[in-house]
Image (cartoon, rainbow over the protein chains, first blue to last red):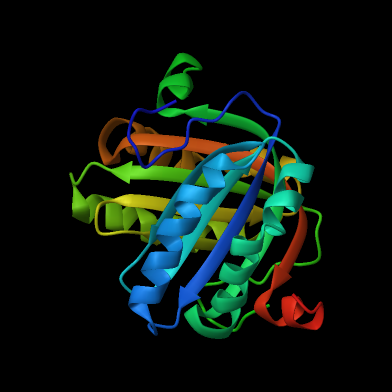
Length: 119
Length: 119
């Protein structure tokens, strides 16, 4: 796995990913930044957490990928009280639009492993 | 599904997603932009293409999600000649680091459907 801190260090598949695509409303920048930081600190304490990758462009379109060892781990994280509050505020205040997808990762390769495979 | 053009209009799961996390090298901005545009025009002509979502932050960390109806469709797109050339240049020139993950989407909900579900 890459050493670049923007990348998650995930194990061999299979594992699970929550894909969160969102458009920021532009409202409440401070509250949003504070919550994002709190969630980034809390998630790694959850059982089954594997890592996170997140990026947002200057037009406010963002994609966050959180990786989990099982569907149960995703289910449990969704119900953590502080996270439920973050979801509620995300819905009412921070995002004009979002889609959440839950998917099972079947295969993964890095720049280094695709070199080994001759790709 | 959202009408925001940054979001893909995907069908009911299950379907497949290629998750491409990458760090741009900063080299060859023009060549990269030209190829990205060409691939964005070519992919929708492939059988099984469902849509794309893509974002990159000012530090060059990007996530691109391409959605497909089947694993076979992903396999076929990977081998389209123009796309293989894009992958080769991505590897040698445009990205300092990347990870590609292939995953099966099992569940999805939008801002609107999560409202209906009382979430």
